[in-house]
Image (tube, rainbow, N blue to C red; front, side, top):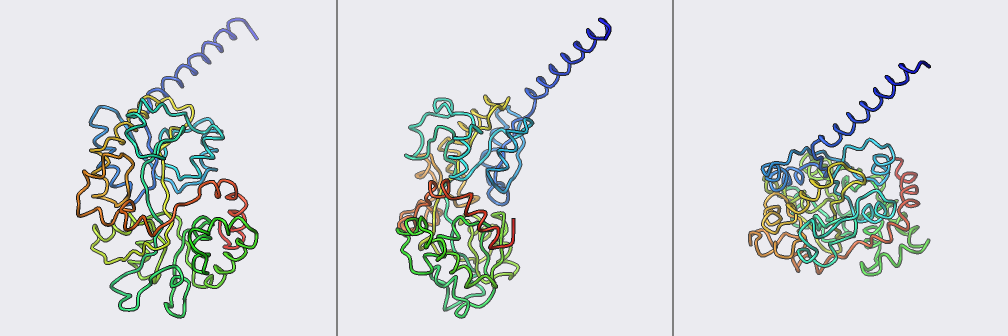
Length: 350
């Protein structure tokens, strides 16, 4: 290779690398959440007001899965900066180095948030339940009272919908089969407990419909596709408010959990990501979210600011919290992969 040609090639390469760096730095902040009514609420409460501070941002929706996040990071061309993740995704992704470690002082300080909501790799976004829901205009009088009714196709004939995945379905199957909610994870940690859960699911398999995104259960109820469904409580409340539905919620023996915001490893927008998390963590901002979707919030000072008329339907309301049970994220971290494989074979889905 001639000397001049080599010099030109090196110069071209340097310009290309520099250009990539500039493009990465100039990319707008991208926040990824769960879509539907929930993300619509986030846009009004967090995204639009945050952009009004002078930071440009975009938002996308996803359906979850640690494999998606692994691919984003390992591929080296991720355009995701802040992502809302479930509890097991938070722990696994943090252990695998998929997220930046958080500096609590950059997001308002740890004391701003409720105990248990601050993690080395994430900050609590919402607290919510997977509830049993049905259409109160179609089921009257004798209505479902718990998971045993969900699995009783003679008493309540018709299709019922569940999330497409092992998590939470194995728990509710065991409860329907007589296991106390406080003993669910103890039972699931045994091979016999797993078999028992799948056997209970077998009893209604012919009547099951699977949903993938949180927006689907209220749509299925509205269309009359199912007689009842599992659903995120906030999606049901949003449908009642926005679409004037009469969907009912059964809180008894429902699992509750917390989603967190994480910052993706290596993002060129780390500073703006921290600014966004600080903004979204302010009490006055979090207190506005239940107007759009009834999920519990994580700033300790936010609850008194929430409209009193909305508090009764929040997962953090003691009447609801006391009849529910916490998801065991460690169980799903330890067993999620093998149970996901078992679920895929059982359900015939991916």
